[in-house]
Image 1 (tube, rainbow, N blue to C red):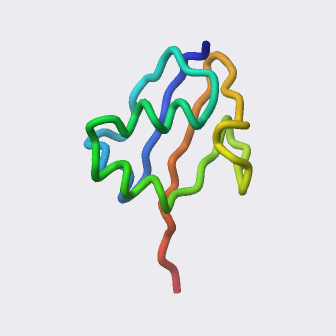
Image 2: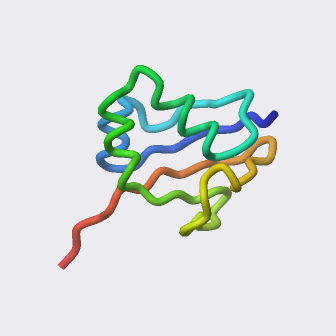
Length: 84
């Protein structure tokens, strides 16, 4: 089981109501997503469009249940950014 912190950016930060929060007792990114979106419908909606970094490395298209979180890992939640 891992503990660490999750950082939210832009729309994810607004939906979560915080910029950063600790997490504990999870093993994979999939478990973390389930845990943080419980009873947070807006965050669950936003997270569906987000990309993720784990300790600075992009998760990419890997299934979240296959992304193992080490103890002390930092997960960044990045909504799509508009540009131009």
